[in-house]
Length: 162
Image (cartoon, rainbow, N blue to C red):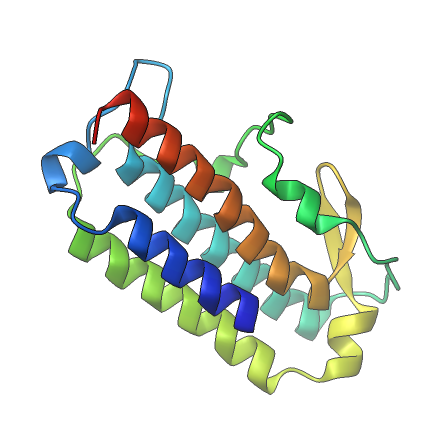
């Protein structure tokens, strides 16, 4: 979980000091606000954690090969957010978002600390680009996904002159 903890610290450092008004401001009609990016991140992390938990209990063995999940950081490859992780346009404060991110992070950490290592390695579920990923690899995938969106947050901050 070390990479997940480090990337989460980087994320919070990147959004530190941004006022809630700016957090909720979109750089353009077709782009997400920083608030929407943060909402997407906790929705993804929570969804992945719940799916890992479900697969541990009910999943089948897939014995997925190691995937190049670090490629997730590449923002040149566009991927549509899954339906469950599309953010709303409702206003939210940085404190609300940090609490939700802390809750999903804790859920993922608990799963990692309590799950059987063999099950994490043998079971998995598909990713739209990489195909089947082992449950064990889904955990650091969350960090790489977050890293990808830290780059997006930097872009939004630049466009909004923050």
